[in-house]
Image (cartoon, rainbow, N blue to C red; front, side, top):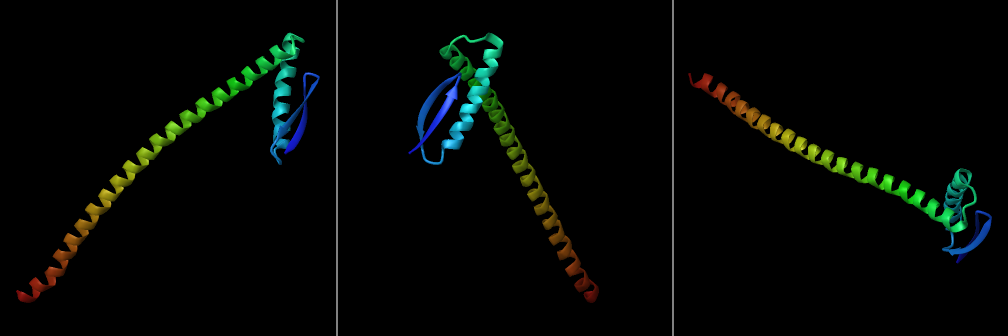
Length: 119
């Protein structure tokens, strides 16, 4: 089990994590720390709890926005997939029609020499 010491707003917190997750946890804490520092510049030292809460809300808002965009992109992909399937079906139908016409023409052409010989 790994351990990480992170410092937020001058306080150090020791956390346990899975082995190999230490750097990821440090990067996440840096993100939180940046939000806290931004908030301190705007509002001053308003208390750890309030700063942590506001930072959490900012991160949650960012997550919500990204999630909404992802949902929108997934919906656009589903629409595009349907358009592609319809186009493929249309092209397949056109190819089938063309193949039938070619077969009909081939049949007419293969009968033509027989007609000339019998005339």
